[in-house]
Length: 550
Ligand SMILES: Nc1ncnc2c1ncn2[C@@H]1O[C@H](COP(=O)(O)OP(=O)(O)OP(=O)(O)O)[C@@H](O)[C@H]1O
Image 1: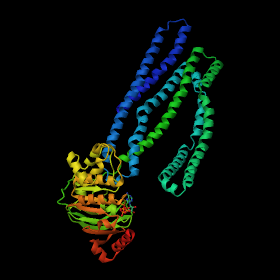
Image 2 (image 1 turned 120 degrees about the vertical axis):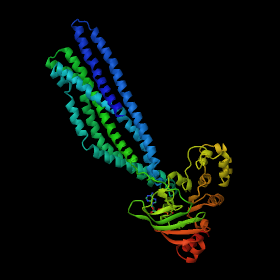
Image 3 (image 1 turned 30 degrees about the vertical axis):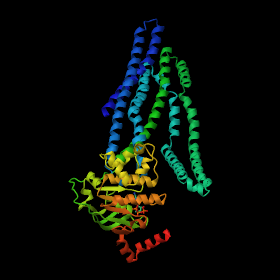
Image 4 (image 1 turned 180 degrees about the horizontal axis):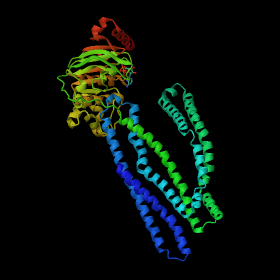
């Protein structure tokens, strides 16, 4: 890849130099014609230079575009490869946003850097330098004349760029506030409207936008005025006028002056290219940093010598876990889930139920202690074996773009149509699927929350994993849907080692054991009747839920 870009840069430099030939050639042409000499040779050289310049510049961009295409493919492959190895718990709305940005926008920002920047900047440097060298060779005073207006622009540019990074940071944070205000406004619109607070929410957004607008205008307005004034120093008529006036004052040869005017007119366009190149480079560097950060996401460590678990006993052995490395979310949890039994995790919000359950399919790895399946630490089990053993049905059901068949078949890609249908029947979702416009072949069907949950149960049935992690959905639209889901779940749980995160106690009173989590520890453990007899936290929770049901 590096060689492709280097070759592109060399070709671009040759192209820039040959672009200069016609400018100089025109002056030479004039010189010969005025002197009454044959100008055919000069005309041929100009024409040849035009062709060579065109080929070199085209070839240079061709080479760098090949390099860019190779880099894009490589980066996308590396991102995909890395994402396949990060722990499942790494995925969230935020990280998904970062992945989308890196795989699309950031890689596109790199395109300019690799495919255009080097070739264009080389041309923008070589072309004026070559022209000035030619003028020095003709008459050094002409070289000075060609850059006479340049210092005005450069001084003003340096003035305009003062504190640029600081100002950009301020603008970025202002823009982040605007985005946050928009998200808040859109997310909360139903609540806000229901409580008649639309004006108030709208005001927050308007204030953020107003502040951003004022700040932006306060910075940009004086710069634009100065820019408008100083860009006149580079305007073609001004450059031509200064050159002609200077040339007459210095009494130089008119043909040499013609060459000087042509070179002087080229310089401002190359400055513009340089300026655009620098801006794109800044953006590309920021994009590259984000891509590197994504590629540096820690991988889930894979076992060097994977061990096959013996059976489906699930054990938590003195497990501690922390998301941030300091605050313990789980603190010395020990729990044994016998094969073929249902263990329910209950407890207050934030007690650590979901976190504990997600340690089994290695969404995260424990900070201390061990999670074992069939006597083997989950960290010593090959991932494909682990996912054949452990299935999960989470509250937030993800349906992929595609048909119902494809969505259910995710559980076991080799399943026949009949097996998919049988799973859907068992999951109590078959009838609903048949009512869709194209039945099982309906693309992106609209399912209610409860229906989507049953599709994911069908998927889990098809996957037929002996261990199952179940995040019980909190709310269903209607009792009928709730009953269907409970039916589907009881089919799914039969004969498996199940760990269910229970949000409503009524559904798990029949579990083989119930673990009450409190502040990341198991505070009570037993069957429903044992825990009621204990008259502790579970009994109080049960009492409270019974009162709510009344
Ligand atoms: N991805 C995460 N990153 C950082 N902290 C997290 C993350 N997920 C959960 N937590 C924190 O860990 C603690 C336990 O959360 P967890 O979701 O396991 O509790 P829970 O008992 O399942 O709660 P709920 O019933 O409300 O879902 C909470 O304080 C929560 O804020």
